[in-house]
Length: 112
Image (cartoon, rainbow, N blue to C red; front, side, top):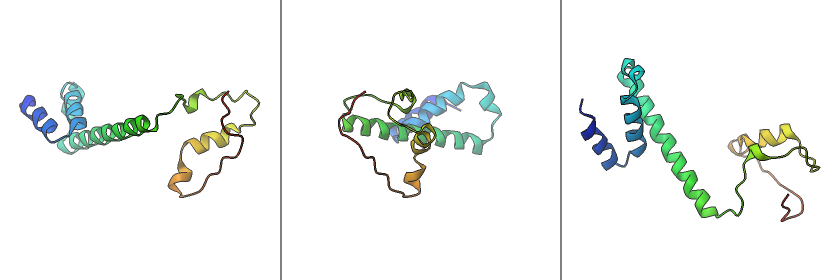
C-alpha cells in the first residue's frame, strides 16, 4: 500500500490525528500483525485523542489563566485543611459526569 497518498488524503479530510497514528503504526513492525479492525480502531483512537487535545488547548488559550497549575503540584503539607482523598476524587471529575454540584467557599484571591 502506498502511504504517501493515504497520508495526503487523511490530511485533506482534516483527519490529522489519524494521519499521525497512521505514520506511527506504519513504522511499527508489531502493528503489521494486527487485523484491519484493530488498525482502524487504533487510528480512530488517535483521531479522538488528537481532537480532545486540540479542544483542550483552545480552551486553555481562551481562558487566559494567569498561573499554570496542575493537581500534581498541590502541596498538602501547607496548613489549608485539604483532604487529599477528597481532592483527588474531585480531580477525577466524576462529580461532573454524575451532574452533581460543587461549591468552593473561602476567601478570593489567595495565592500561596
